[in-house]
Length: 321
View 1 (cartoon, rainbow, N blue to C red):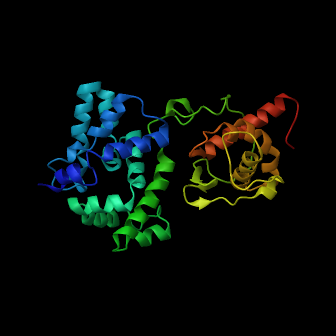
View 2: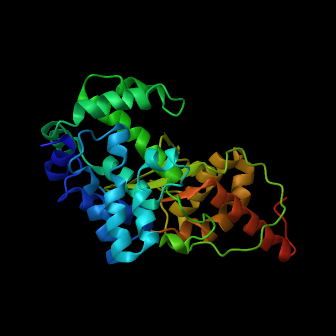
View 3: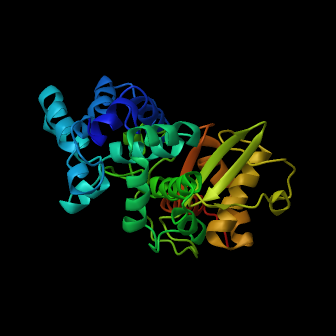
């Protein structure tokens, strides 16, 4: 039995477990996967590993083609391409854009706990190949943090997995809008929480790049966290807004969301005074309307919201300065 077949039957690409984790990942990224065609894609996208003598390298990367053929026959060429482009390296080597299935697939890897992932990878014989290939293909990259690079070089599978999952999570946050229009929130099945206006030429001292991502996480027991680019936690600064709260909040109006608005803007603008000037309007327009669960906000979205706030104030005859 080849390593690819073992992977599909009881390994990392387990046909009984992997589609479920991809479905959960899709839900977290793009909303509930109600379309049954998505679940067929989650089920068949890795079937091409059957019979493969390797899960990595040129042989393994062609595994996308079987699932793509199945989806094309069942639902048409566009669904075939959706499935075909779920591999980063397959898409890159052919000059294609990755699909959202690729992003959900990577988040599924991040969500799989070590106590489940490592036994499956060992049982199928994939673990050694993955550890070696990750060092060759990714370790030493400028996109890795020093801690991630050190873990990828570790011979301890748990440390290696932590390093790769950390990097992959940050990659997911930066690439979750793959194959989509970033300006159209509804096409992501997300809450369309900003009213769109034509671009306005307003000079704002934006200190962070548009690709910056703020990931809002609920940790349980009324504990929350906001991570910049999936790595750097924002400090909770209730004194900035001169309000009282115990943690970051979003998805409604109130003191907690206003502190959240102030902290996010202060970090993005690197200007506390300007953050406070926009804080109230930004809370009402964006923070209060975010989904209550885990969600995200990009620098580009923040900039659009600030332009919108400024435009509203100017139309009313008011200015922030």
